[in-house]
Amino acid sequence: MEDTIIKVTDLVAQYGDFKVLDGVSFTVKRGEIFMIVGGSGCGKSTLLKHLSGLMRPVSGEILFEGNNIAAMDEDELAEMQHGIGIAFQSSGLFNSMTISENVAMPMREFGGISKTLIDDLVRFKLSLVGLASSQYLMPGELSGGMRKRAGIARAIALDPTLIYFDEPSAGLDPIMAAGLDDMILKLRDMLKTTFVIVTHELDSIRLVADRILMLDKGKVLFCGTLDEAMASPIERLRQFFDRRPDEYITQSNME
Image 1 (cartoon, rainbow, N blue to C red):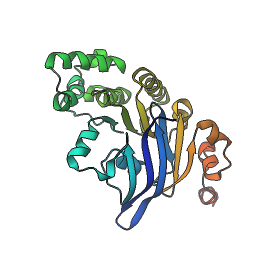
Image 2: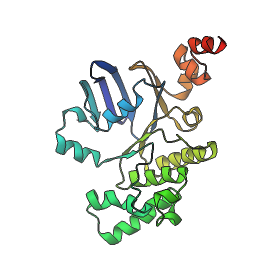
Image 3: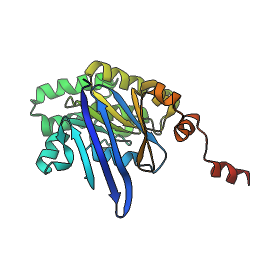
């Protein structure tokens, strides 16, 4: 039997009267890299916010390790969130703190760890992402790729079983993006962490994805492996991977 860490059933999300997610259902397996893809406005980031408990669904069920996030009270939700890591698109670092202070913050706030051990753990987490020599630098002194890696170091500060990552390669050049993809693979293999990643980067999808969920107009269009996606006859999926524009875009460009 597959070890499922997340199970989503009939998830509905709305902004006012506008339905963003409409009956979304899928599972995420423990230890896999699960990528959420789709066009702009399809509901990717909204889904990630619901999975992490930052938003509550209109209806449906989100199980994390068997516990329904949607039914949790504020204290239960906060406790659950301590067991997951979130790496923001912008890295989410505090500019007034050094890199080591940023990584140490979750440990000081929630870890119940001695100061001496925290210092050792921070150095270890930074070494995992290749920033051991940058611990005393400020975020403004780092390149975009280094800030992304520092954000991951903070996300793994409390050894979470699951990390949510929103557009990890956004704003990075191809070399930095490839390095970040390689680091995600190494962390998954070393720490046995599950990654759920929102992305639109085809190179990253092809390199690191174990399975792919494609959303279209708030519904699940496809969920499966990359090989299954490549063999799928679904036109919208083929269009995405072939980087073909919508017909109306092509026509408007020709006028």
